Image (cartoon, rainbow, N blue to C red):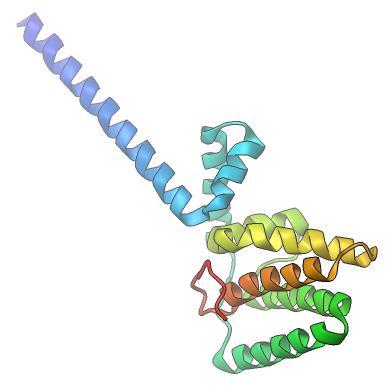
Length: 183
């Protein structure tokens, strides 16, 4: 009888471990799918997968409490027209166009309901729905910083514009992340 109880206990513990591992793996896959490259960035920043996953879970909880809203059809059209003007401006004034692209993306994030709590917090908030576009956005911001000091080449400025466009398109979509630039 004691052997049977021990055997049942071992089976229950083993089943619990197997279930726990399965839940942990599903969580990891879900977070990788949701955050894309941001998942690995968080792992690198925190130094461990567990800490990164806790950080990403916290981002999701915070994001759920935000009032993120889609852009109305009318506003979407206005934004699209403004983006077209920024792109046209690039031909004659690339540095100014990059600045205006940055301003437009910032305005769109604000209109979607993302709070203005500083650069890093904005990136964390955006990562929940726009993780796949965020790396390009970071690169665009770096190039924009170069352009303000007059150090960016025209090719870098062109790259910044395409990267801003990726996030712009994601934000302008009906609140659904797209992860890819549409032409």
